[in-house]
Amino acid sequence: MSKPQDTLHRVVGPFGGLLLTLAVLSPGLGVFVVGNDMLHQSGSGTVACILAATILGVAVAAVYAELASAFPHAGAEYTLAGRVLGPHAGFAMMAALLVALPIGMAVSGLGIADYLHDLLPGLADRQVAVPTIIAASVIAACSIRLNATVTGLLVAAEFAALTTTFLLGATHAQPDALHRLLHPTMALPGGGLGRVPFGVLAVACASGIYAINGYGGVACFGEEIENAPQTVGRVVYLALFIGAGIVIMPLAAVVAAAPDLGLLFRNPAPIQGFLHQAGGGIVATLVALSVAGAVFNCMIAIGLTFGRMVFAVARDQAWPGPLNRIFVQLSRRFGSPATATLAIAVVSVPLCFVPMKILILINGNANIAVYGTLAVAVIVGRRRGLTSHSFSRAVWHPLAPVCVLAAMAALTVADLMDAETGRPALLVTLLIVGAGAAYAQLLTRRALAVSPSV
Image 1 (tube, rainbow, N blue to C red):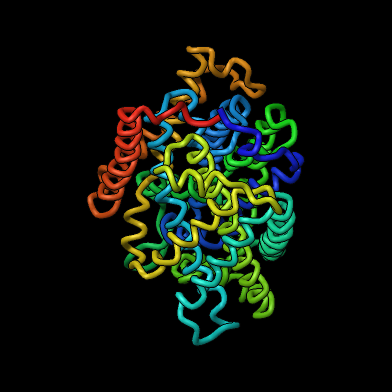
Image 2 (cartoon, rainbow, N blue to C red; image 1 turned 90 degrees about the vertical axis):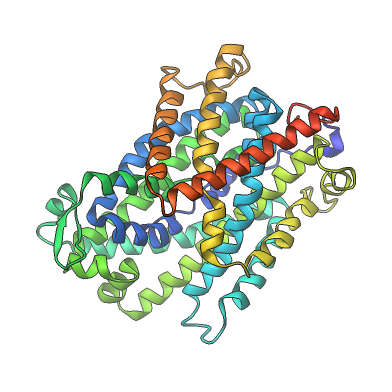
């Protein structure tokens, strides 16, 4: 059991929790980064793929809402899986996040340079990434109230950029706009446009899931939100629908308004190219700055998640002895797990010097492992009565977790069929979660492991 001095304080209201969760979801990245890639991949089918991901998201949100309401503690997926399925599942999730979060921080830091090149010409990507990672980590180490304010301001700037994109698209819509959305086309290798094959749409749906991923991020802050058992479930659903809506609308507007779809899909940065054409250079620059802010906001959210997971593991006395004493400490000034949070900078900065292809491969398919494990946790939790006290129990059980498991199985098959990237990434993911489960077994043998958190 945790001691009072090892417990975070409930000082954030539901609205603050929603802002923090939207920072984790980062709709700006969903549009301007993932959306660009999807337009290359599946053309105007991008909108349909994100809609499909949103429908699946309702099932995933039901899983997160039930578990987060039942166990409103720090530790995110480590805690949610561990409290129901035991230490092996909890540490498997910890291993997946322990790898994915620092890599996400490094990749975001390197990516933010792309949006600052016009203002800071001549700076290498690493010269931007390293100080950005440090700054995001320092902010994340401060009080959760300060982080809710900072992320809220950045989310507002993000929404302004997305609203501008939507309005420019809506006011320049082409006569065949509806036909474009209902009959998806994509750029063909030999030139021209063609219908999007079903197989391409199926693969692009995986990108659609990533574009709106993060609405379950409130689980990370459950120990710091007022009346969390009653409110975190609503925050999960609100974040999903707000985030998905603000992602889909600008993308649909751009597809509807582009004078030439072929040129749009072949543009290295389709959405930014449209903004420059429809709104001029100043608008495109301001939006680029907003995207840089969205990336930085996401980095703060990564730091917050990492710090609370490392803190929760230390509270369970599951790190080596000295690390437990270091990471379980809360800042006297901020009441946050500051040392555990700052640790992400120590891990992420060296990763900036690793080739991007290796980082992407190592990151694997963590979402498949995480979503699948949590779906199993809901089913087992219901059978054992462990989630009977949840204020956000999913209706029509077990429909939601079964749908999630079916979708994750389909994504796994798609990865296995992709020998170039999908299969190796899946193998890396299995090795990582396997290492986490093996670590739990080691702790069990040493009689150190407890059921994760608190």
